[in-house]
Length: 132
Image (cartoon, helix red, strand yellow):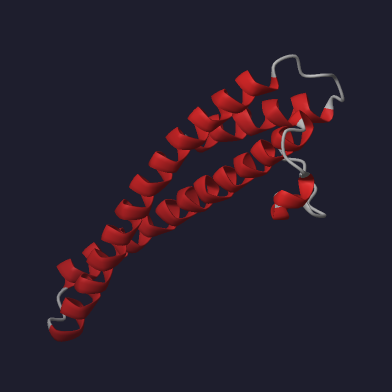
């Protein structure tokens, strides 16, 4: 999922940085809003899963404090090993959705139907290039 989001961000970034006139900004904004909705849902699900694993990890740690058994230590190690990829993936989703928000604001600015002063996040914000 993270790779798919990165590829989508790169394609939007190339489109916005090309300097070409975008024919139908309204349709592109509508498509972007749909993508943002999907990614927000994905982000919420991964947040809930990450929280569940964190709670489970803490519960196993508490049990390990009272009952020093090898099986609990192995379970705790496995849960900690799973937490790292979950946190990394959530981090990628969070930053990706924030980048999509910036692209939406840039398209709104280019469309020209609302003043730039009404979009406080655009003041001095530049879209950072995404590394492949």
